[in-house]
Length: 104
Image (cartoon, rainbow, N blue to C red; front, side, top):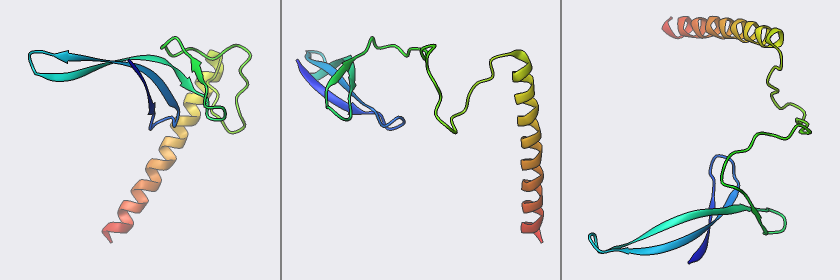
């Protein structure tokens, strides 16, 4: 058994895995099996245990400034959908203008 570290390209987080190696007799090759141990803390380098599943945010979570916050009520959700539809139509008009300029 060995501990291996892999960095997630999307999130930039490093995870620690317990890796066991097994010999495959049919293919005559070594195979590895990984089990997630936890996430590696960037500052201390310590492995913080996880249960291997994505967890929802805690109720005490406070979003950072500029971070998208999902609407909590139906009314807020409708308003957000209308805002996004309006933004979408404005962007589509801009695309059409750019296409028409390109074709000239």
